[in-house]
Image 1 (cartoon, rainbow, N blue to C red):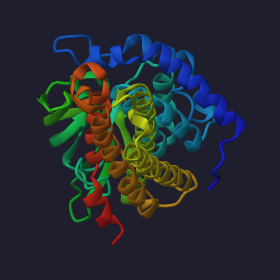
Image 2: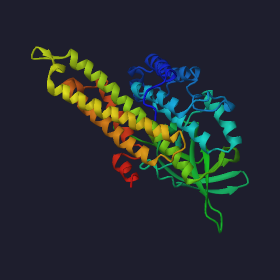
Image 3: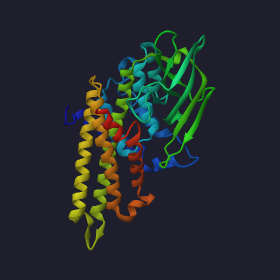
Image 4: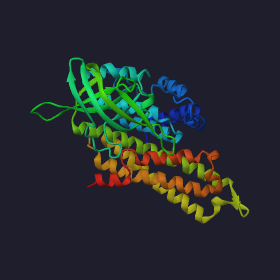
Length: 368
């Protein structure tokens, strides 16, 4: 794995940092959380489409930019620093899943609209509690018009904003093992019921219940295997680890700036050895998380199953992000516990990403 960023990666990181600074300030993050407010970041979305970010990891034959998973990790790092809304990242996950799982004709039909920004969605191919558990939660029966799908999906992110949810269903074939198909479900289709699942961080999770929902043939992406599904789920988890490591770096930078300006006993609190040691420990943990996350993305992008690498990335990144945000609150003193500082926004993202798809206890089990 390369440890030093290339000139192209540095240029991409700088461009993305400028874009997020302009179109994704913390005021936007706060506004999207307001009850009854606008839930979709339209101006940010349009800026990302113009910058061809949604095209980055896809091949030129579908209108993409022929980028790599390493390039996408650069985007995710800047997204993590800026707290990029989850609907953007979930749509990229949808594109990655279509690219990996769809038959060639279905891939060619769906990816161009996503790249143009006309399709947004999310992925639900693995358990929300364990990214390596890719058993289908839905059952399907073949009909003359397509598939009739029944079942329940737990904790699907941004389902209320999605045009399509990519998931899997087991199709009963008499006398043979069930065939698993990847398919796109329209959350607004008849027979689909969305139930919000509120969290302390105001994340927009939903339970999706399907009762004989018709999925047309052109929304069935094709038969898929367990290893393909697991690779998609682990790729999403590895990219989330990049997000976590970069978010932790931003929290450290904000904390250092505060400790250099805030004075106690006539001197900056950053001059006290106890504070310096705490920040040093935060930095060491975050750099280990960054390297582990980029290693997981590197090897997944080169065809490895990636279970071990992703497990280590989750262990490092989830632990570091939670620790860094907790220590940052402490070093900010009393003001670290009021909402006006924005610090809670990173703390809440650390909690969500730390457990989504399996936390450190689950990831430790993957190593077995």
